[in-house]
Amino acid sequence: MLILGLESSCDETAAAIVSGERQVLAHRLAGQESEHRPYGGVVPEIAARAHVEALEPLVEAALADAGLRLADVDAVAATAGPGLIGGVMVGLVTGKALAHAVGKPLVAVNHLEGHALSPRLSDPDLAFPYLLLLVSGGHCQLLLVEGVGRYRRLATTIDDAAGEAFDKTAKLLGLGFPGGPAVERAALAGNPRAVPLPRPLLRSPEPHFSFAGLKAAVARVVGDYPPEDIAASFQAAVVDCLIDRTRRALARAEGATALVVAGGVAANSAVRGALSTLAADHGLRFVAPPLWLCTDNAAMIAWAGAERFAAGLTDPLDTPARARWPLDPGAEAVRGAGV
Ligand code: ATP
Ligand code: MG
Ligand code: FE
Image (cartoon, rainbow, N blue to C red; front, side):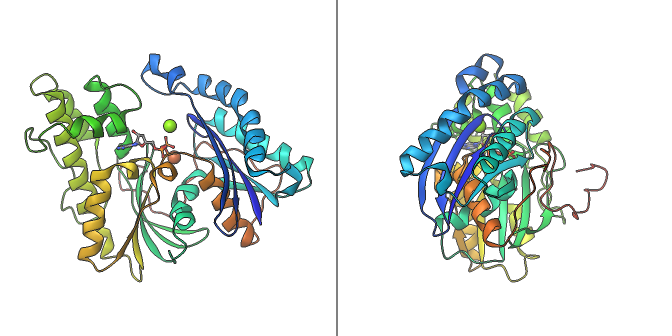
């Protein structure tokens, strides 16, 4: 089984071909950093236009890399949300057109499901259920992944996502865009105990997250300490919050076979190291995808497409693009926060 996957929900345009046997036959990616850098963040209209220009050549390149023709794939998987709606529409419409052209089914993939199932692409032994810490630019959630399409949300952020906090901190410190890798690099040269910073919601009974107070605290100390010390202390605070909240959720993750991390912030070594220790303390396996599979890419969309296709889940050509699309629609809103 061969699946073509398309991703265009934020500022990465990507196309990949993955087999049902977990072979990544091709994965192509075009970033848009240079186009957004002058604005210090992703500009939706610029992103959508860049996706239009980049996507078709990437699909052709991916097919050429794999030595395949479009008609050889069994289905086309495209991100249908959540994300910047203009970009999502570009990828989804392209996916529909390609699927229709060769008479193959469309699989409309939730971008978060792409992140959530990505560890199963790199680790064939990862079985359901597992506790997933999904930490990315727009999300910070703890999910019990019970099966394909079966996600139980145990916690979410009541304000900012962890990746967003990394990006804001990078901006405040003048480290540039995108922020996460820049903060991690600066932190290597800093003292994680130099700057007193808060750990919002630490030890609170529900395993939710909050990063707005941490971000505000960073803004107050900029200029008072070397940027490397602020970066290191900020990263240490984020790690403490992620670990404390994940430990809390582990107590509720009945039957979990592994602790898994996915999403862009999962590329951070300090985060990976601390989670690995936490898993070992609980006698659980720790699974994290390779770095290239953590940040946005199309292999994870193709893989989620393969898992859904294998389960008989395909979608009609009038499937809408969605700016918002929770993985667990039944999840109770966090009281007072509406998330
Ligand atoms: P979402 O998946 O929630 O829709 P997104 O697609 O923008 O959001 P991803 O590409 O999954 O997010 O992740 C990007 C985020 O990961 C950014 O906030 C970025 O700063 C962060 N990130 C990437 N690498 C690192 C790193 N090494 N350390 C910390 N954060 C990182
Ligand atoms: Mg990006
Ligand atoms: Fe993402």
